Image (cartoon, rainbow over all chains, first blue to last red; front, side, top):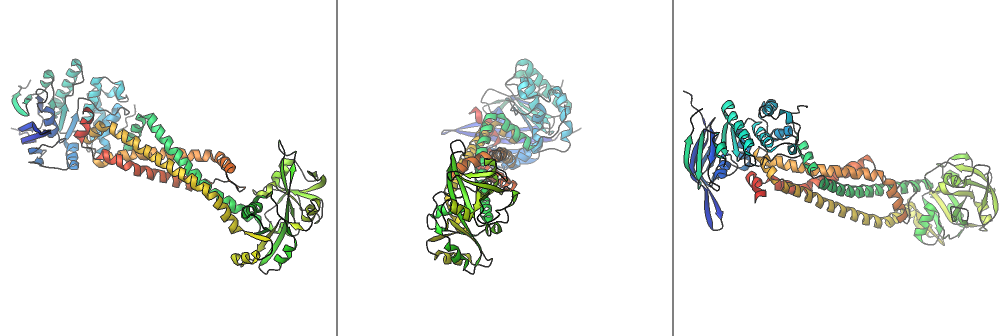
Length: 236
Length: 401
């Protein structure tokens, strides 16, 4: 029997925001484990803390309390966390991010946008796969185009390619289909599922879209910063 | 399509600047104008001084004795000839020659007449009476294009400077008529171009000029060449004791003229400094605006693994590129417009030497561009720091707030 390593562990994490005199818990004592190769969807109503949780898990934000271990490194432990540059080093090694607004650099071509992460950090051998990644995502013929010449679905696929070039251990996707029509959303869902199933990429997906959420095997529902439901779909 | 697998920080910075072309262009223009003024100013500073030095060296003597009068006029007379002429008796030559420090002297008489045929509405023509025995020895640099010096000290002959001959369309053997005096002279020599006031001068034997103008025994100036070991300030003091004359030394001439132009220089320098300050503010504004507009993008770069130092370098590189471009365009402008600038400066200055007034060399260009880039780097610190210290999540969320 093979055991799968845990890549992210959260123990009783809280994220408290101050709204005037009021203290609002966006995440309220949440614990979870994410194993390598898992595909987790986080769903829930607006304000339930989905994006906050994703940002904490992806080391973009610090929890107010609790413990977070990422890739075996304790990133945060009860109010004490790593410095910004240490977090950046963890982010560049472990994570790839995609967002609702694709945030492509408008003056760079598709290929150049995908190559941007290499300007700052390059995993050994990663550059060999850039064209293969573009091909897998159906972008090889669009490599020389500027973002304004692409459709929304293509732009999001470019953002996915950019997130993948450095071979991240975990892909974090925050409402990746929020700006796309249903057909393009299905397309992105398919891409994510393939990345998980064929390449074993660990994915955490935050979405409002129930159809997209079903791309994942594990689905977690959040409400008021707490996990209220969790289900695992049987393997197809 | 060429499969290029590298994207340098430089390429990202360059394409970022290309995003807002008009804004980047205007910032570059601002820097270019400041650089242009800066290079032209420093080019003028060294060019003017070099030309003045060359004019003074070409005089062939270190001191000029003139009749008592305005020192500025004396300085101008020494270098360019003047109109408010004052005379002294030629006996002064004997007094000067007696001094042991004197190597040689050359007496001169300048006369100016109005020539109605000169230019479109007439103009002044200056004649310099010189001693054929001493003047050529003191001016070994003068060479002839045609002919030679006068045949005797009382000959009715003229030697024309290069430009004077060109203007009058004269050649050796031609007849030259002095306006107002109706005296015919023969052109016996035409000088090669010397780049000094001699080019525009018409030389006559001293005695001939004195007779024609009825100024027998009178001089307007005496050039003095002293022995090499002479203490110039002490000798100057000695000369000051001579009656009714004043001494203009090279040092004095330089000081007097440089004082005259220094006021203009300070004014232009102040304008250049203000222009540079304004363009620096422009650079800060441009880069800061660009940083604020790209907060989300900077957040994404950080999320993708860019360290604070990477972001700092990127913004700093953008600033440097703007300044480098502005500096290079400004330097090009300064070189291309140097003749026009020189023409304008000549109209403004009380005295300008005959050579080039603006000297722009590679060293000046390099120093100026380096200075502009360094100033740009200084002005880029704040925007770069602002960008570098942004936290990724706050930056990504920034525009949504």
